[in-house]
Image (cartoon, rainbow, N blue to C red; front, side, top):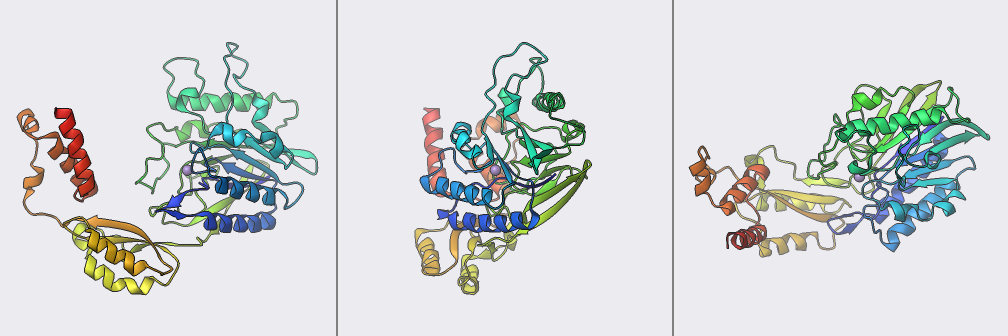
Length: 413
Ligand SMILES: [Mn+2]
């Protein structure tokens, strides 16, 4: 069985107010080319199709158009889409029956019900055990598991950990598949999952990706009947551990400036339970650029004047630009207007500014707290500002300071 694994499309996402629609269209064109070249049995989309649970009409049209075009590439292509944490499960699933006519299977949720019989699954497994056919014969299965809220994974004991419950969920699901009369041991098995694994590498630190819940990869990788885990949620493409059997395909192009790595889709060929993984790179239509560079330390950064001087060289290319500037104060309206003016009528897209406050010698502002009395002597406002300074290596922006002050005063009252 051969599949193409992709995830985290985030259709409808904006980068600093810039629509990404054109980039999505470009990606779908690339994806069509890759599908035609690789001729997989199935295209598997492991969640976060849309960026928002209430996608706009434009986003939905983009998605429908892409899926219909993909499904028409050749007769035998099966498309399987599961919901991610960004998607609305019911909205994604609403046209499920229509999609079936296009050989597209959409799974938004599992509609769990109460079941006291330990031998029966508390949901309709046939909805997510998708047989993959080649010339009318089943060659494998995709266990199309969407994102499931931590609290919704069934548990036998009250104190089951999240990781344990995820493990037994998949364990029961694959045992159930083995009882399926259409199943035989030669079939390849792919499981989707939209969750965070304990040893996944996140390069996208700005954003909280998974909350505190994460799944122990060594535990679920012991489910040897599952040949390949087509994972979504983490945008940085990666194998988990040193095996190719468990993989995040990653997002198809950078969703934020922190996703400054090679993006791709994954081609997975499973033959006699041997898994061969191939990466098909997708070059971004509109690159991201941290300008003039991401400073290693605050003192390393350049001043606004220095940065502006160099800017001319990069404005004529279509790219997203984020500026990195050394400044003791936040950027004034005048300075901001000056930057906007420079980008006016240029191809480059201005995406804001990161400020770096030079290290101040006197540690006065962040006096060390050693005793409870020290702690009591600091106002919540000063403490908050200090924590912000330490965490982000910059002064809290003035508007945020004003808001924070308001909240502090209100609480103190
Ligand atoms: Mn995502």
